[in-house]
Length: 108
Image (tube, rainbow, N blue to C red; front, top):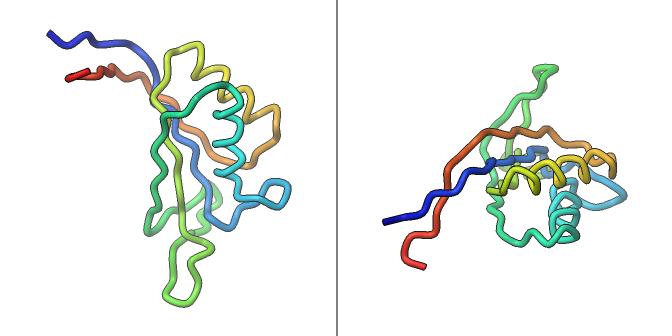
């Protein structure tokens, strides 16, 4: 029988061109996660996104810098809160989504 755990999926999103102290904003998020001991993540690139202001971000044939990206973590509730708070305290300019999930490690 698989033992399910309760937690949160936490996703940070930003265009590839978004910077924080000269580095990719999502790389800065990953650094904050590593500083908290979080090593499990998934990073994905998308084709198109639109921000709250309606500005569209997409990868173009000649320019990939505006490609939307996201980094996703599945974390226990306390660690999810710590990561979001660390990213906010660092002032990293990203959009964040947090939703409850159940997760397991079948076969381990």
